[in-house]
Every structure is written in structure tokens, then in C-alpha cells.
Length: 236
Image 1 (cartoon, rainbow, N blue to C red):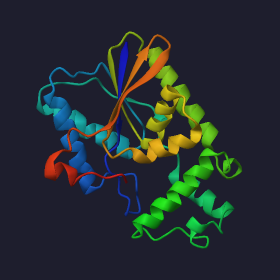
Image 2 (image 1 turned 135 degrees about the horizontal axis):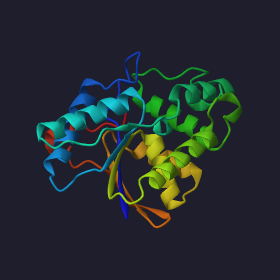
Image 3 (image 1 turned 30 degrees about the vertical axis):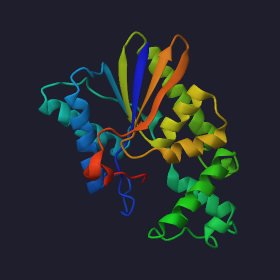
Image 4 (image 1 turned 90 degrees about the vertical axis):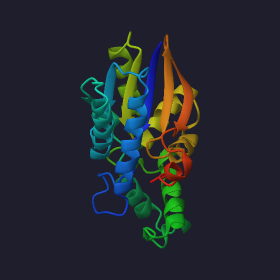
């Protein structure tokens, strides 16, 4: 049986021009995650796979640094763009273009970033439309293309590393939700809920037995407990 530990990246820079960099809070989340994993000397990984985005690799770098501080080397990470997140900006822009009169669209414009409730409603509406295949003509990679990419990537991962015991995958919420959907065979519309439920540095565990994938646990944050830890909880 192969165990796959998936990790959603630490908080990225939502309010900055370049989203694909860890925020200051994200750096703290990643450091605490790394320290937690490295402190468990019974928890080793034979394979590490990391998406090709900056926020994936920066999260991984913090984990690797923590293991190094414990003199516990990890294998060199395999950088695999199959586990890159979908293009959020393209999906949101496509939704605005196609549905400018939608109540969540604020008359054809995105809500201000300071309006967290409005942003959340807008993102949910756009992602629901995307998951229903309503934006396929507006995007280079639509829902079905994204789903196919991730599922091909996970199939290749299990094929390549058959016989291994434990693999770490550092990626994004949309990717991990697709893996969960594959394991649970849930409708596509539910995968948006799975995606948006994942917190930054949330860990989920899957088991590959024979030819089937099983979800063991979802979105755990044992490294962010207590008053200080809970203050670092973020969704985006």
C-alpha cells in the first residue's frame, strides 16, 4: 500500500501584484508545518513531488529546511507541472466576461479585495460555473482539461512509484480536490466545496491499494493548534 500525503501550499500573497509568492503569514505557516513533520522521526518520505509554482516550491523549501535542521535529509523533489493549480485569474475573468449581469459580478467588475465576503461569493459563483463546463469556450484550460491533467498526473505518480511506502505531494487546493474527487467518486459540483474547504498548509492523506484510491483524512492542521496556531489559520 502506498500512502500519499498531500499538502496545500502556505498562504500566498493575495493582496499583492504577484499572488504566487508566500505572504509573511504563509512563511510562518510553512515553517511550523516543516518543524512538525521533521519532529516525527517515524515519518519519512521516499518520494517528494512538488508543483512547479513558486508558492509550492517555497512551501517545500521550508519543509526541507526543517528536516535539514534535524539532520534528516529528504529526497530531492520532483517538480511536476501536472500538479500546478488552474489559472484562477483566467477563470474569474471568463466568468465576468460571460456573466457580467450575475449578482456576484458587481456589474461586470470583481468586488474590491477588501470585501472578503463579496470576493468569496464571487469566487464561488465563478468556480461553480467553471465546474459545470459553462466557461469552456472562454479558457485555454477549462474544467475538463484541468481534471484530465491532474488525474493523468496522479495515475502516473502511482505507476512510477509503485512499491514505495510514502510519498509527499505539495500542491494547491484545486489539485488536491480533484484527487479527493477521484477517490470518492463525487459529482464535479461538490469538488468546489472540497477545494474551498482546504486551509493553507492543510494536510490530507490518501492510500493507494491495488488499483483503487482511498481518502484517509482531510485538511488536518496539527501544526497550527493553540491560540498562536489558530491565529495562522487561513483559506486564502
